Picture 1 (cartoon, rainbow, N blue to C red):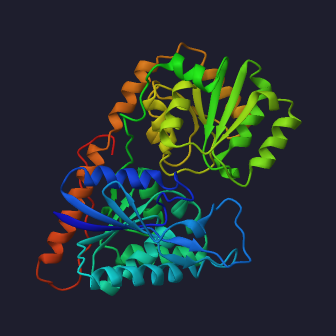
Picture 2: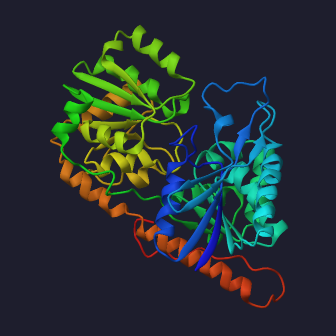
Picture 3: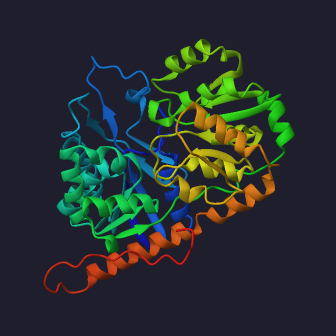
Length: 411
């Protein structure tokens, strides 16, 4: 059995229970194969006492170690320097993880591989950690780490250094692999392993009951995600004057909430917009089930799990055609892609979706193609290949680990 250490700041904790849920789910599905044992190193920021991040939650109350099912999750603290700390964070993160990993190894723990998620700062710090302790490292690229942060010169340099030194690289969609190649990484070093969806949790169920329980009485759209500008909630609100028979629910929290509320009031649609805040996954599944469509008007996405979650509940989507999203919304049963990322584009996309009868059963069947099994098997092949190469006698220069061949056509 392989023993792995998942290292990432993207992991649920008591202050933000939904934070990095997609990382936790992928790991839980991998452990459920009974071929991997895992622990999690999930540092949380330490903020100076005079700094208050309103939306960070009570990070000071996150315990040093927790249990999530069978997983032990360690939460060391790392220093975050607001606004100017981008170049320093990989170092503070490394030292926080180094201390905890050193203590675990001193207690007799052994890890075959470090499984890191998010290239910057997590992957950069994890690669350094692996070199210090002689443990191979696989880094998964997930979205903004490459399509936003890599635009800055210093992080881009550190990302490329980490990519060169990592034993394996994963991208959650083809578009992110293409971005790595554009940055200068050899394509045969990058494996595409898309996220899946929990088909048992996110399921159609009884839609009429769900609608009664959440109070939907008319056609209702949903917009789900962190309340920041790039998620495009303002475009969905802006479309409502063109959709007079339609209500909107917004799930999530974040710094843009006040601005979004003011926008809805200025457009005279505040009575048709409900902010539901952060929901746990069973509550979220109920809301997906009750919606008529999910709208995702993001300007950037890696692989947006909310799309698959909604579709698994039988709810079609209207989504911006950015990064990995066209790989998710690749069939009429899934929904439609909007042509312009603005209020008019959202209104046009919603109109196009509802211009023909919806088949929620077909939407669910489409989502069933995206279970987690192919991703789990892809990880196992990649991890075993890396460890096998490590066991071979060194012959000359270190060889690059080629990408796993993906038999699943959806990878």
